[in-house]
Amino acid sequence: MEGIIQLLPDHVANQIAAGEVIQRPASAVKELLENAVDAGARNIQLIVKDGGRTLIQVIDNGRGMTEFDARLCFARHATSKLRQADDLWALQTMGFRGEALASIAAVAQVELKTRRHEDETGTLIDVEGSEIVRQEPVSTPAGTSIAVKNLFYNVPARRNFLKSNPVETKHILDEFSRVALAFPSIAFSLINNGDEVFRLMAGTFKQRIVALLGNNWNEKLLQVKEETTAVKVSGFVGKPDAARKNRGEQYFFINNRFIRNSYLHHSVLSAYQDLIHEGEHPVYFIRFEVDPATIDVNIHPTKTEIKFTDERFVYGVLRSAVKKAIGSFVLSPSLDFENEMPFTSVATRNTEIKAPQIQVDPNYNPFNTPASSGQSAARPDVIQHLSKIRWEELAGPPAAQQSLLTKEEPQEEERSAPWLLHGKYICSQVKSGLMLIDYVGAEERIGYETYLRRGLQHGVSQQLLFPSVLELPAGDFELMRALDPELRALGFDLEIFGKHTLKVNGVPPETADADNAAILQELLEQFKQSQQQLTLNRLENLAATLARQSARKIRPQSQPEALLKVVEKLFACETPGFTPGGRQIISMITLEELAGRFGRSV
Image 1 (cartoon, rainbow, N blue to C red):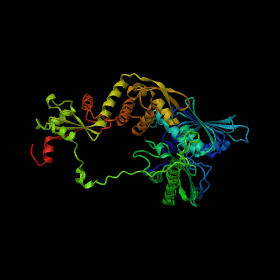
Image 2: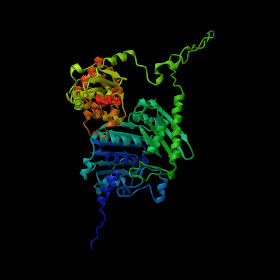
Image 3: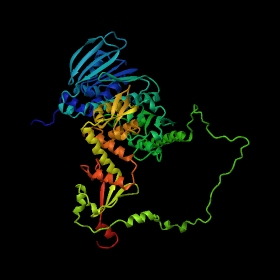
Image 4: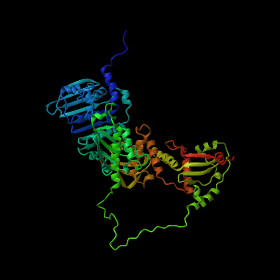
């Protein structure tokens, strides 16, 4: 009887392994960069084309390989880091499983050139789908060059699941930044589609952070330093006012390995308690040095998750170190020695110092105020306004409420002047009762449809007399370039003004008097937060984000004429009842509901 269990062919097993290790081009970038680091390279260059689809090439000046090692490195579980099982608990290198090159070679066309420093000639090997198709001597610089071409060429389904080139490029930039941050003593460079994105010189950890994120971060960082017998914590955290809308600039490194850990993230977050607004995220770049025997890095294929033997202790040390850094910033004054103004007002020798005078009303009795019952006293003008409201019986069935969402407005004789409640809600009498409109939500809906119409019609931009300059991290800069057509349609006129820098020449007329560099930066943050993968219509997403951002900065006008104009604009919209994000704008309180609150019938 023939058995049903069979061994998989090597090329199929390699493709299955590749599915775990190489999920997208950025995964291959991570593995190749880490291999270059483990090879002792002091200079590493990354070259990318078309979001990694066409080419991913890593060139290093590390130790290089012999002809035999160059051929063997493409075999599964072939590694130079381990000799026995106990070595897993003393790891000091990045890679160790020996699956990276085998997995990459299973789903791509790979060209390897390598030479040791003591050898005169190197080795060239071409691999396609795990098969070595060429091997020969070659003249090449000392070190290793690996070119990964046509990733997933033999797995079309995987290739079809890749995102757009800007999205894949951003993922590559993220992986590049993580490795570059982990090893600031190594020089890195990145070339994307022929353009040099980064040229990072070897330096300190802070210098590497500033080189990656921009010079404006130099004054936003606070040093973190704490050392115990079990763990050494160092690095930098952002000042409270540098908190971001998304969790982009948050990095943990354990023994130079980037990790994600929600428990340690909560430790940092708790140190910022009451110092940042809700919905904001602190910025941090934290390095841990621990005994490799106290952690387990072999619990996830990408090695970004780590287990500690005593995680609670590390939590406490980290929280204490971050709180100390923030506390030293809050307590120490920020001195500007170039400021011509004196630090304090110093009295002259003959100046008489007087005690401050405190005015006290001896007849004040808090129990005699009308608000003693817990309710604020109504102002006479409010009472007079309320007395003018005509409470009429509901003229029709509950369908009258639905008529509001279908743009049917009450008859002119049934209208009364709208008023603003607590600076947030527009109140208006309608035939069926009382209509409440969320002011900010209404402005958001109005702004969204305005921006969307302008974008579809490629609306004009208002040119600025004094253009502003916006410096961005490399990933944000590339994303902003990808969004340029949609931003121009909305009214933004942007110009490349140097490395990772944009000049804002024109803006939508509604934002002409605002800080447009800050608006664009916030717009980008909110866009990334709401639409990471760019799968929806980008113009609609940007219009919704810009409308939400603009609406929150509008100061509600309490004049009846201004409120009526907002109501009329709202009901002229295609969907007046809801914001672009689906939040309700209009709410009705019918006469039946009001009567029921007072225990009476209509």
